[in-house]
Length: 183
Image (cartoon, rainbow, N blue to C red; front, side, top):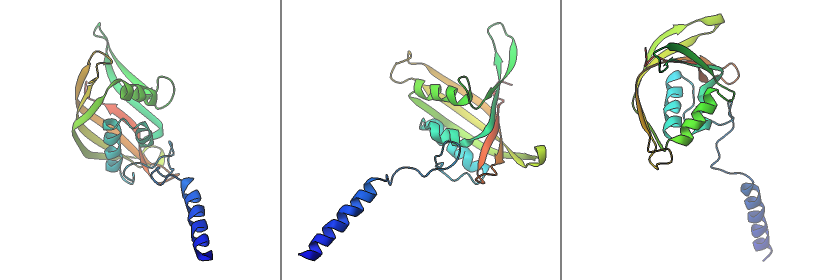
């Protein structure tokens, strides 16, 4: 009977310790402190996580794909035909993370049906080695629930991504995304 009490006590203590931890919670790492879906040990694994983040509306994984100095650049043509080059920083109320969060909340379905990453070249700014990849993509976003008038948009084009390896954790992240689809 004493052995039974010891076993019950040991199980109770073990359950108490385990219940304080979530075995399904991701480990902590990177800018958003979440481990990426695939370890970002190379630029192609970052692109895998990027695609996953878009298609699963996962802002934490998306944020972990971006370098602290990340810039998104695109060409905007206004209604009068004026063309302007726009650069968006990573953070801030009108930054890329805030815009992507709104994109994820507005559209029920986001797909990157065509997603073809191709290594392009290396660059060497300020003593660092960056890898440059081009991605051919077909993006579609749909409001399936009608919350925003059943909106549906598509974009086909080329994006150029520049990656650098973080000195803090040796993981690659996107430092520059240049949307060349409208050029």
